[in-house]
Image 1 (cartoon, rainbow, N blue to C red):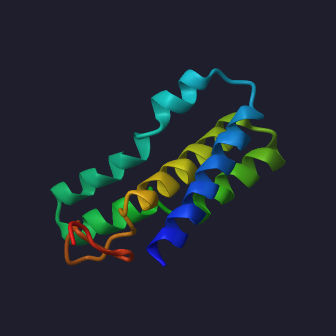
Image 2: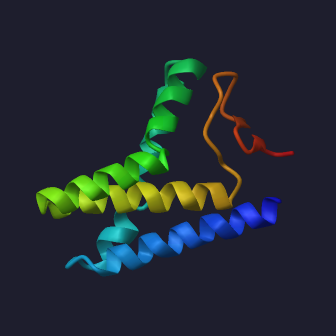
Length: 116
């Protein structure tokens, strides 16, 4: 099952790469912004509950899809880019086994405990 889920996330990441290729932007934007959603980890400086909430907000693929679609409707390329980056990064993290976080701590995710 884990292999199937990782393949599904790889498909999502490839979709994000394709969608980025439709934008009139340099690939340096994609590379440079790819890890920006990890800024959500800063919430863990406050505590595990705030950390989990912040991390999860920056790793929701549905938020990435929503930003992308709003960007298309408003013809605002920056929102499309933000949505693609968020979606791509979340898919990449899930390929590596980093899922959405529970409030118990960083290593407790919806994909299982990190490191096990």
